[in-house]
Length: 264
Image (cartoon, rainbow, N blue to C red; front, side):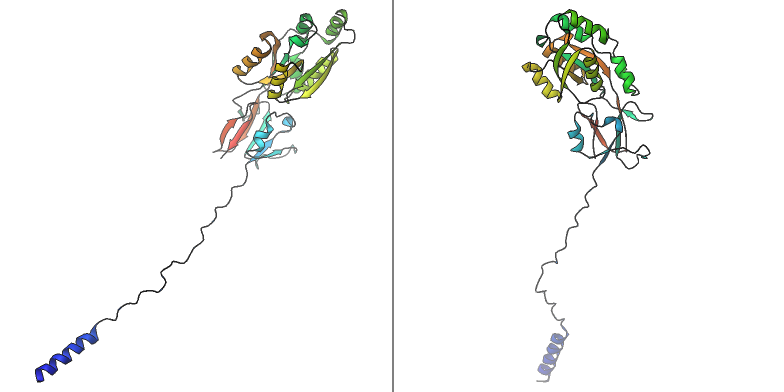
């Protein structure tokens, strides 16, 4: 009896010493945490020198990739831009990989005679245009040129005392206005229609214009113009370089007219 009592007391002592079970939490769902939204990068700033105003054929490509800003203040330090671009070679800047070649294209089938077509091929003085533009690095093609008074005389002797009328397409590039002015001073009544190169190509193929002031940057483009209207009817006039200064770590490609196209 005494032994039984001792065993019972020992059993109760062991039960009392057991650790209480740890209760499981009722809700194990973690507290939601918001994922931080990354801050949007500011748009790239693309500065254009004054000599580019109204003279960029593919401006839409630039505005699609950056905030394009016309720089009008001559004292602008140019430090607030990711890239600054202009016509002409600037000291310590990078020259574009593509250089626009401006050419005078005529459609012989639209002109009164082969003789007048020949005179019109020689009616533009590229050196005068390059001198007037005063863009460092611009190059004029050495061409035989008929002076404006001589062309007027020839047209009059050919039965056109009041000159002839031409409808031409005009790409937006430096010197194009000077080309048109030279034609007008030579007795040619020019109706100039602003066009893109694609529009000019279509109009020449459809024979709805008499000629155009065009541009090309690589030889294959020039070959395409020759195939369209004939080798003799694409007359290279002058070349205009483009240069730029860009911040490091930009990815740079080039538009068809030679302007840098930037991205991060």
